[in-house]
Image (cartoon, helix red, strand yellow):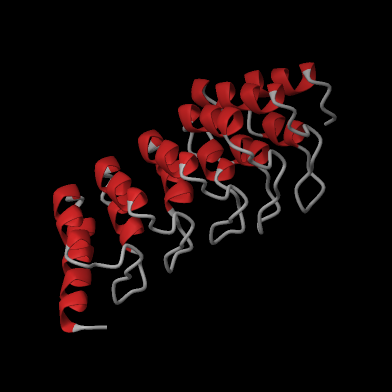
Length: 205
């Protein structure tokens, strides 16, 4: 790699970290590699994603940056945007062909943290516009449905997410590693409305 190319990569990474779409475009025009990584191994596309700049992400995707490349924390734009509720970036990543089967550091697909964190719009988009695995089990032994029950306050957003998961065919009886099913967890946590929905869906305690 020439010094000029190295300088261009450094400018690209700095612009990506700042969410500077114009700076990214100029660095690319100067010969920067759209898949350049910083010293920590973070791809430029993930730097732009972490900067929460949809326009910066768009410029890099248009330059054919690898949309599935993960950083040291195993985030890529699809996973990070889902976990952080960044619908505009999620849409860009999905439309660029992001692989929804790639997992995060907990072995979970994007739907799981989105469900746990109450990102209703993200969950709705993933279920309607991506080929997500509704019943994927992460390394903790939890599905999206289990996390929406176990790690929530049972409030309206999580109620709506549970309803969406049920409507889309989630296995309401898929238990955790200890054999405890979603309905039992909902009852134990006092999530009365979620428990009612699970009961109506035929869930076993």
